[in-house]
Image (cartoon, rainbow, N blue to C red):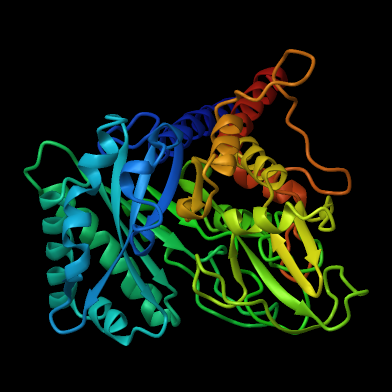
Amino acid sequence: MGQTTLSSLFTFLLIFSIFHNSRCQKQCGVSDDRRGGPSRVRAGFWFSQYSLHSPAPTIDTSLYTHLYYYSLSLDGANSGIAVPPDQVAVLCNFSGTVKSSNPALKTLLSVAADGRQTSFSAMAADAALRAAFIASTLELARENRFDGLDLAWEFPSSPADMANLGLLLEEWRARIGEEAAPSTLLLTITAYFSNHLFDGPTTDGPDYPTDAISRSLDWVNILCFGFHRNGNATANDAALFDRTSHFSASYGVTSWLDAGIPPCKLVMGVPLYGRSWFLKNKSKNEPGDPVVAEGPRQKMSNQSGVIAFLEIEGFLKDPGTKSVYDGRTATSYFQSGDLWVSYDSPQVVEGKVRFARRSGLLGYFLWPISFDDSNRTVSKRASGVWLGERESQGGGREEERFPEGGAPPLAAAGGGGAVSASAQRLSVTGCRVVLVCGLLCFLSGWLWV
């Protein structure tokens, strides 16, 4: 009797584990091509505001599988999408222009809103306004030959906003599914680096609606940078690892995985800009040392404290400027006089892309591609590493390694709320774990019998 019961139990576990694994694969698009999702994503955000400096025809489209047109905003009067007059022609020609050199390229139209835009919060809270917004985005995407849509809401600031975001995404996906168009539009969001919003380790912010996200989206672009926009000390603004706080890309990726988003629906952001400060004392020039102000306003960004990679290269040409690589956080920084800059060097970008690959993520995105230099140095490095094209001096492909003193993929970020490395690895392979457990149970029952 006991043997029969155990055999039945083990058989149930085996069947359940296979079903669960199939469900996970389906969630990752392995057996479900309904949305036409890609197997891998090498994306770039093209900012329309920089179209004079970096016109669409000059983009090296061979480096990307997906390009985002960033961005349009909400018309608060009718919850439609506002297209500025100077963007009409650029928007209309964008997809055709970039696809002329890479027909396989997918283009997505990104609609952006910051946390201060109350009209967006109001739209998400009203069913009729959500419907108007969705209809407007679909019409605009189809008219201008885009392959998908993206929502860059930075950031829903309350539990109500997050709940309404979930409703919006589900209704958006449903409306896309009802279209009679020959191809299904992709649907993504560009989100906070963590699934939980916080400004510091003790801030109790809202969580993203991960169930709705997992059901409705093709993937999530996570903004793994901009960690230290303000402050009175130098800091690594886009650290891959940080064992002393939440503010790292590895922590952010882990938080999304632990919230239930599969790795095949995560695309990790890599910045093509640096964060700058003026040092209080030029002799104190390491991360955490005091500053007196943000760095100067730069031509490309038109923002204080934000410097494009192509502008960073100008500083690095000075023989007196030395770039330092910090293996503990996988970041780079340099000092030029009393100016201190944290940035993603090509070496840092290579490490981040390897991290994304080894963690099983869907891909990476560069933000914004207009900030790369004329040789596309960073973009080429990222694409080459992702495709496995960078070879070691010995003639084979480079071994995927991380800096001494750094951390392995999904290692604990440290600080309050950081989870163990074993728990983080479990998040990445969760779909397989249940299958393995079921098989072990079945074998144990067979041996017992």
